[in-house]
Structures are given as C-alpha cells and as structure tokens.
Image (cartoon, rainbow, N blue to C red):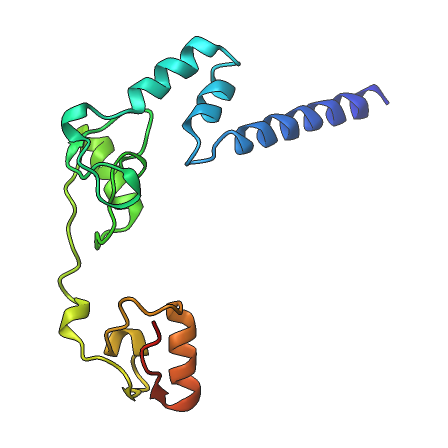
Length: 163
C-alpha cells in the first residue's frame, strides 16, 4: 500500500513540474520564462530583460518593431525572437542553430526561387500540379493562401485578386 502512495506522489510531482515548465516556455514572453526558471527572483528577471534589449546602434527596425539582423546573439533568446527574419527563406530552427553555433545572428537570406514579382497577376487557369499561390502573384490579397488554393483547386481556375 505504501509503494502505491509513493508512486502516485512521485507521478503527481512530475506532472506538476512538467506543467510548470511548459507554461513558462512561451517564446514571446521572456520575462515570465526567466522569472519561473529562476525560482521567482526579481533581480534575475530584470537582468535578463535588459540583456534581451539590443544595442541602440541596431534599433533600425522593420517589421514588428524588431531590429534587422545580423547582430550579436543573446544566449538566453533565439535569434528569431531578437531580430526580424520576415522574408527569410530558411526555417526558424536553421536560423536559431546558426546563431547558437556562431554567437551571432545571421543576416536575412531572401527566397530567390519564388519571388512574387516574377509571377503574373491572377486570375488564370490553375495548373493541377501547382498551387495558385505558386503560379500567380497574390501579394496583398486579403485571403490566406489556403483559401486561395482551395478556390483554385475546386474551380480549376485561380481566383482573381481580392484586396
């Protein structure tokens, strides 16, 4: 009987610890993550928050108020949380790995293979082997890509641009 009670209490402790760890790992909230990981110490939270602020020389921001890379990598933050990588052809894991390995967040590498400017404006016939958003330039369309592609798949014609 005592063994069963010990197992349940150990299991409950592990579940509570895992739940706390998962709720503290919100990638957009560096303050709550640092407070919970430091055991609630206010001084650690404030030192990490100030360390996350990039130097004034790199405050030239584009999208979302984040500065433009390259720049130094804060070891407590991912590069994609420190700098704006909008339009970069690489996935976030690749960008963050480069920053972790080199200590410097890499510059933005735009996707040269499928520039929207190289595609004609819709509407037009839908190639069954390609999505409408890969055939035509829908930059600025109010609908998401899935909606545009579904309309093209169902009708056989890529839909016109909708502002």
